[in-house]
Length: 242
Length: 242
DNA sequence: GGTTTGATCTTTACAACGTAAAGATATGAC
DNA sequence: GTCATATCTTTACGTTGTAAAGATCAAACC
Image (cartoon, rainbow over all chains, first blue to last red; front, side):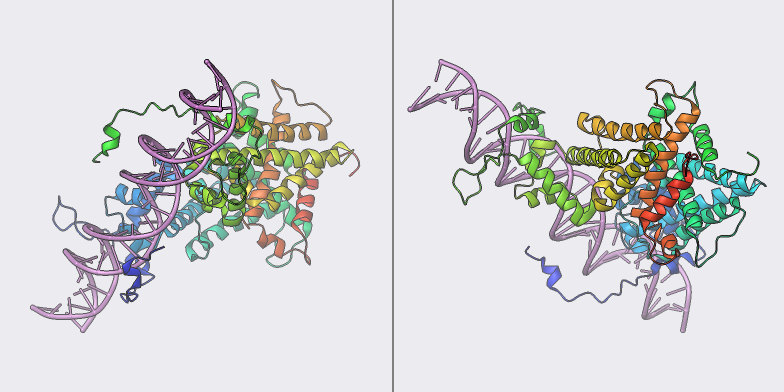
């Protein structure tokens, strides 16, 4: 209660241009300091610097440590600087998640392309999925655990869709068929949901440490990779010669 | 910087007894107000009231709205009252998650007992898992998405272990074998991981709305339940007569 | 029965955070 | 060279978690 005096004033007309990030991204960039040694008022490419700082903070301090102010500190700018580029924390986190989905998708595509047999493509993609999450647990958390994601942002929407579409294509390939865009059968839907659920569920449980109990009871030092491999091979709907 | 004057004083010796909650829980409880109409200084069973308030806040405002102060407001006490019973926010959230795991486990056990065929027990349990998550998305979020869980708390540790042990038993039953406590084969581990991953992954994806794209492309108004059923039946390692 | 002890709840206080708004500074267009 | 505008800083405020000290009551003790 007791609204501040500023709130009673006329709403400022300055603009809050809503899309300054675009203008910044289209600039030449990497135009750091005019005189070496002192930090210039204008950073040059703060948006990119903030995203990289955010990833460092994330992997160092976890999802809870990923605050606007911490990112600004890490990048060496004032705590309000990120606002101009991302609007709010949701904006920063969403852009970071979009980057994650793109790296993620790229890792799966690369892994899939390294194999020739369709069935192996799927396996390789799935393993790349898990491997990426293990290598970047913070990013995986941002993508699938953060409560502050705005999927109406085109970048996040597109990156996320692309990643899941890639997974779907992989499922279709392993079934020697193409998943149509419009109508699909319950059998096809079940295959897609199964592949997604298996890989995503395994990854979540693994990162949460809920599989350690099982891994410890396995012979010698069986790796999570081997468990994943065994799990997936048993789940595949009878490949012709396996 | 500039430590407050209080911090320079001698550390208070008052006690901060560390386990007042236990004493409160063992009390007769439900001894509300001495004179009807005014709120008494001592609540009677504030711990329980706070947990119920927390669940209401959670399902109403989501995980982000679940703050210590919001819970205190909902329960009608001062914002610092929860501290005495749960230590900090992590404590409150952890106890809430423990309740979730217990309800969760109970729902699965009940569903499993309603079937006679081992294979059907597993299916029913899995469906109960998903149904519980759909009915209590907030609680599911606290259990599997919250960054503030302290598994060193006995209540949470035990409740979580019991829930996963129940899942494992279900897997063993559907394979017509008992999963041993100590050493297990890679094949058994894969079966367990597969069941957990399928159910947990499906639930996560469903709650996150990542399956809507698939559901929409299915004939008519196919439900998520039907998709789950189809997914699970296809994943089961060839039941004798199905 | 009266006192006392300690658990329970409130009040006060503070640092960190997200966010808004206004000021400072440099860049590019004219 | 001037000026508009994008970029960054400074200041300010409400909210949160948490610590600490004070207020109140229940039960134990004598």
